[in-house]
Amino acid sequence: MSIRSGLLILSLVLLPLQIPADEIPALPAETSLSSTADHRKFEQLAGPFHSGPEVTRACLECHTEAALQVHRSIHWTWRFEQPETGQTLGKRFALNNLCQGIAGSYERCSSCHVGYGWEDEHFDFTAEDRVDCLVCHDTTGTYVKFPTGAGHPPYEDTPFRGRLFKAPDLAHVARHVGRSSRETCGTCHFEGGGGDAVKHGDLDSSLLAPPRHVDVHMDPDGLNFSCATCHEFSGHIQQGSRYQLKAAPEAGVAVPGRESDRPACQSCHGAAPHDTGIHNKLNQHAEFIACQTCHVPAIARGGLPTKTLWDWSVAGRRDEQGRPVVEMEDGLVVYDGMKGAFQWEENLVPEYRWFDGNMHYTLLGDPIDPSAPVPVNRPLGEPGQPGARIWPFKIMAGRQPYDTHYNTLLVAHLFGRDENAFWRGYDWDAALASGMATARRTGQTEAGFSGEYGFVDTRMYWPVNHMVAPREDALSCESCHGVDGRLADLPGVYIPGRDRHPWEPFGWLAVWLTLLSVVAHGLGRYLIHRRRMRGAA
Image 1 (cartoon, rainbow, N blue to C red):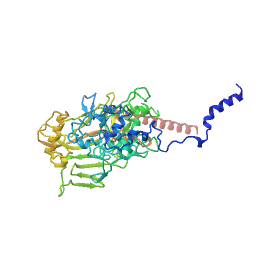
Image 2 (image 1 turned 180 degrees about the horizontal axis):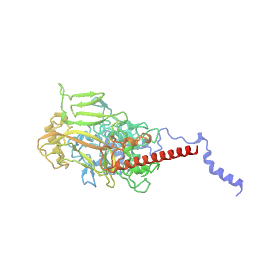
Image 3 (image 1 turned 135 degrees about the vertical axis):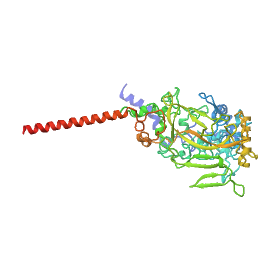
Image 4 (image 1 turned 180 degrees about the vertical axis):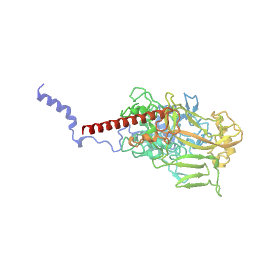
């Protein structure tokens, strides 16, 4: 081929790149390049819509299988069959020491359900139009569920406890749907336990746009991860559950088409993420210490304190008008007549336990020992056990009702329009009887209520996974290798600087004898040298 022919062919190949910029067709300003569909053009979404289920029915005209996929997710069922412990968990069955449980309080609790109309135990979990598409796919920032609306948004502007909830334009939201985001996930997960930062400590609204030192993954100027970057979804089923974590992932770096352990740290960073250095010590640590232990040095460090104590035993105080008394300290509610007394903490150092990814829960009907703090849940895993690692936890302290005759935890009917609801009549006897009756009707328990109750101290463990700090802010060696280090009370592992081996004094004696021998030898050599120098003179 001649040089002239080659140049001609090259010019033809490059020709499409030579089109003047002003001749390239422009995309509409609002066109999203992340989707192949412009939902503004769909006639089904033109509205007007008068309810959430109407929107869902329109969505299902195209996304025919979406609701059925959601029906199989824990976001919908609030039920999880734990294969290792055999317990039936999920928000419908597991207790907590925040709002105790959902029995009898469905209209309030289901404001974080991905559905519409869960008002009582008769909710139809097979109804496709009850799935809420907008709560996860809104991109306008205007869609919100009403706190006591059984999962519905407000259909007209409605005040609630001093805040005005504006009715969203459902058609506008439906025409501007997109992928889930930190905003949509955070609508529920940042507000768990009844308020921002209350429950987890490592999940709050500071993660909407966190600086790098708060979360190195979600920093908008850095990696800018969304929740689904790690908690990948397939068919509306997300990866990762607090009811069963991968404490010791084995699949390694995630590769498309191969089984992975996402959202484990090792799925991206591998099993040996550190520079080998001297003796490869950091990577050896990673064999039995969770990444989060060193790389989440503290939680609640985005400017929002997290709740560390919830005492229900003192709830019920009201003023002369019958309204719940509210007391504040430093801008935080420390007492609410509806819920009791609270304590808060910012920049909270986690506590550490051996953990194999599984939790054992104290469920309704399980016997308890009220003479000591009752573990609402407790991490499983023993030192040296395959799959167990040292893991950080937020430990939530509580004081909640229990049956003093049967020695079992109780669940109260908190929210409702009837006088049995505690937040209406402030009668623990009625609220506990009603809550336990509902729990029995729904199959949550077969346990009864003797009518005799008291309050017991409880503890609940929340695994820490978020607010990952950059590596320069990770824990130093001295944080753990010391008598008063973070792992001072952790059993089952020998930590230099904290622990002493029975033979250690003999080792140090050998070191000092060796040093003394070296000094004596050096001194002898010096004295002999001096003597020789005098003889030569």
